[in-house]
Length: 262
Ligand code: PML
Image 1 (cartoon, rainbow, N blue to C red):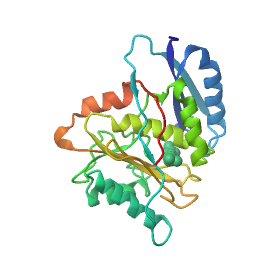
Image 2 (cartoon, rainbow, N blue to C red):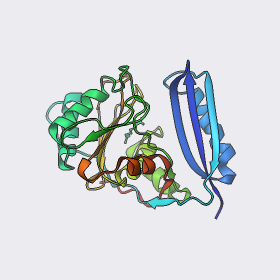
Image 3 (cartoon, rainbow, N blue to C red):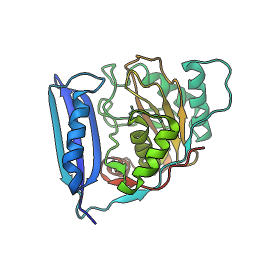
Image 4 (cartoon, helix red, strand yellow):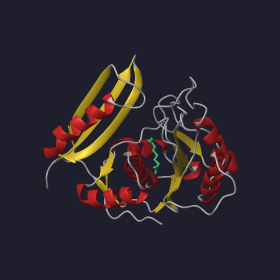
């Protein structure tokens, strides 16, 4: 089997993060993937960067975990009304099913949509939230929890492309988010995740958990809103911060298998 590499891109302007992405690919695809990450950095919605770093690191000798994608739930029971408030209620009820208190769920939505970092902007990583009390647990509220080192296995390309066609996804948001959510749901101590994109033009968000899958939710924010981010919910009683952060940041995960859409 070909040696795998983690290829990472980080773009910044004035010392501030503009965009970032990571792929895990066989050696022979490094060049093509680096070129596509470079193009992505140069054309990102968040603006043109002044500095772009692309690194490629061999994963030879490292354990690589293979996981199946979470099941995708793409429909909700009919709702009265439209707009973000209605969809926030869907997110809160999905989170409640997974065991997240009302207070913790509503607090997370509010923080994400008003800038969860201490400076009032988007965080670089995710919030880490106690599922019961809603208390924030991440050691650094600016950086948050970085979930990285995850990608689709090469053999899953066909499955994920079929799912994208079925869901009419014209951008990589869905495939990247489903891979990340599938890794995060498997983290030691994980209960659920809430995501609202920080891309101003992308309003679909999701709630994910290993118990109930990846539930897409339309209209989690107003079109044009620059705020967004993620919250990972954990139960503090059965949770070890070091183990959790090590898994989220360092454990290479390849997602492989069919994408089931319900
Ligand atoms: C979806 O389309 O299923 C939701 C994707 C969320 C994208 C989050 C992001 O911008 O990183």
